[in-house]
Image 1 (cartoon, rainbow, N blue to C red):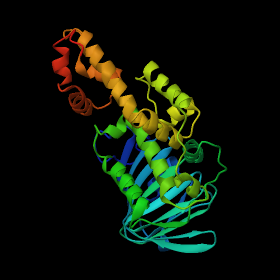
Image 2: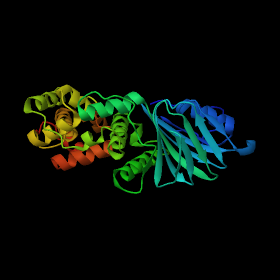
Image 3: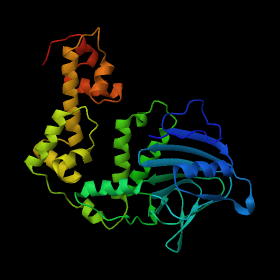
Image 4: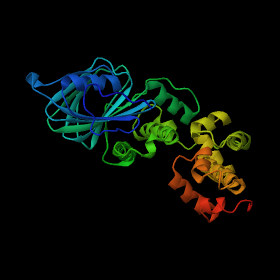
Length: 338
């Protein structure tokens, strides 16, 4: 994750969370500098050179950038060429956009999308606000290729506007809002690299499953189950390095399958999803470490982090559900392997 400095504007809090920055009431010049750093080169204008102030919240999780922009007055955002996939989700007011020679209007029930290379032209009314999602082209295209199990040709033809009032797109917009809602929490799980990577993958695959594009029919078609031998390669990798920050795409690549074929293969031949299986192996390894460990020399937190659990409370809950006792109880009773 990457954090940028203050850009000559005071942050909202004395200590911003890692990977996130906040700016209140910045002027046009400062806002333009921040947007250029996090998105792509943009021009920010106002009608009749009127004074404009903005509030901005930004977070970058690898190839994914999510920002919340609040406009006090009317404003325009333009860029000659989007450097990545760009989706705008209004949260208040209306936004007008031009793409492919047509004009579109979005409100909190609709979203606007731009592909890499598209000119970006957004016109905001006063007192409007929006979430702006930027995805590096290679990341979205690699996510789609992993899901399908074969290379894809980019750019992916995202529609210029899509409905957020129902269906998968509404669910995807809630995921973006959830991510934004975590920005102000310094100890949020989104600041853990393992969680951030999985969340980023969920945002990318969720978008691909939510909007029409030329690969969507193939993407939502039933997937063939991976053969037992291929699934076994993924299982072996989990046993060899359960502490590794595997994603489903990583395991699919090891197995030589698409993500969907791996998931179906695990369901059929293992009886659970790949990431659920990984968690069970990690819990088993953590239990072995706790049983063999000296309570005077190790801690539950150290064991949890050693085996890939970023959040101690969730680890303790999953551990108790699996073994019927807390990790600390196990640590106080070494040598009792059941």
